[in-house]
Length: 167
Image (cartoon, rainbow, N blue to C red; front, side, top):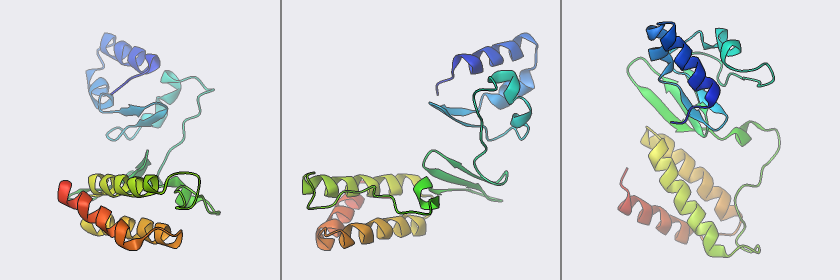
């Protein structure tokens, strides 16, 4: 976990002020470059101005305290579980985004199959429910098949991935 200087200075000041409870709550924050997630402090929005300059715009991702999108994850807090699945912000766009290769492009066809394999592995790692994993693998399988990739070869990649990395 990396903390930027502002985060580090703020935490140091909390310790100096003996605000150990808040420091402990904020120690569970996750940062990846410019994405920040605070999962256990509902009032983080009240202290943002104490940590970050006004020029750094902070936006909330998710409409409530039980569901949030962070990086490429959708995290939902349920009564007795934490459900994690795929989040792709391009799904929210009102236009198509071309994010996968075509087999007859200038990129070698095998790259497309390898990207598919890596996505199957990523989905298996991220999704907390097998049905979610199936949904996303089927979705990308359909896209690549429509683009001209061999369906049988794609399915072999799924089987190879699942044999090597059981979910």
